[in-house]
Length: 209
Ligand code: 3PG
Image (cartoon, rainbow, N blue to C red):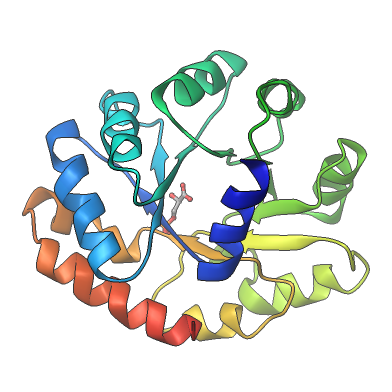
């Protein structure tokens, strides 16, 4: 399972970050992503609807769903119970990493500095979320951090748009690029699934699959 999930993320090189307010929209949202050629999503534990949304998406069987903004081991349990296949944190929590590993799900902690990358390495991980990517210096910063950490791959997230996406995708150290731009809050609010698919298709084309 670990292997399949990581392969899907690595193959697609894009990770839509979803902040969902209404679990009833999870299914049409998943449909829109899949229609755009992107069979994965990170549902953030920032809203009460997150666990139900993960359950609904995981039940479809046509996309890999993970949980984001996971801050505690209890949230890891809830996420995995709901069907999450990977765990993402904004920063490094040894407790979240340990619980994820116990449950056998890939975990991508946030790292913003070389020290935080070394914390992830010490915990036995080689992929980190680079967050908040654009504010920390963007693709140039990822490239600089990748130089000493040759075994590390990054999931830059935060401030990514169609204007800067290509700069991240151009880096071999970038496993996948994360962000909300394909599934922006206004699109979810207006249930504009056609626009989700349009933005997803455009990003997938750039990721050059
Ligand atoms: C995240 O949790 O990864 C970020 O909130 C996504 O940032 P973005 O909205 O700038 O893409």
